[in-house]
Length: 433
Image (cartoon, rainbow, N blue to C red):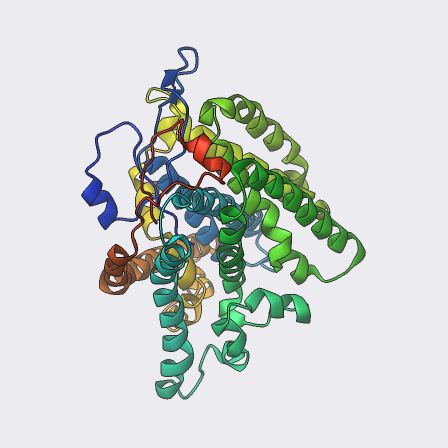
């Protein structure tokens, strides 16, 4: 789950941007400043928006805290309270989906005017995603069993590993109605995103912007409707949680906002809607937050709408607004850089560090279950960040050097595409992941 973002108001060296990963820039038709709210609506955004790095950092932070929370079986009242609070961190995955739909759709739409559309997109996604994904599988399921002969922690995963190699984790979990991949269960969300990456470029390439927006709305309604029906009429909870179809609404909410931001009015046309959509959807989510009930998964779609509006408001926030300052956090932006590695490593690290410490052993040493769990969360968070940091600098970033062979170049305009007339109203820019 990797997304690439940057600063909208500073001067940026384009070569340094390409050395890092970048994102599509939403277009607006003219440069405007709303003097009442301080919202800045520039004519063209640069390829890197730090606010979206921070949003990605927030998502991975809450998901990681969720992974290491106390178990629901813990008898301690304070630990139960901590668990009931941290469990909402699972919604960070929904935020990842919305952000992914926003960024990937923008990249794809902007690349339509350039040569080698499919080759460049799939090659660049492969260089970013596959090295770590398959590197971890090779290390944990092929190499580690050769040296770890007793008490091997990934036995359940190894028995079903064939599905992992083909990004079918979520399909198997749904079919069996069981979380059957052990410490690799969380790879279901990587499978969802990979399915989206595989099919969505075709829709964007062969559709005008307006038609693609209609596809977003239609498929989002189908996604939400079928998920709610499955939750209401079946008892297959895991399928409701993991099937790609059931998460399309989150991905497509982000996609719709990305396409809308490239319309004639750009962000100026959707910011007013997002100003009421975010708080209204937030209020509608209160029953789910307070009751801790799934409510037939209706809140899933509300979270998508809330997160989509939040992303738009973060991108368009004026330099003096409090909302913008939230997304200028250096800590969140730094975490965003390593979010993919943190997500991949967080669960497999649990059995590996169990030989050094567990929540129970720390609680016994400290003499407090609450403090022991808090210490465990902090130590595992540090271990996850450290592993992701090392992975990025020692391994992942070297594959990204090959991206320079898959850059986009403007292609001759095709009069048959409606986007030609739309894009003529704005400046063209080459944008790549």
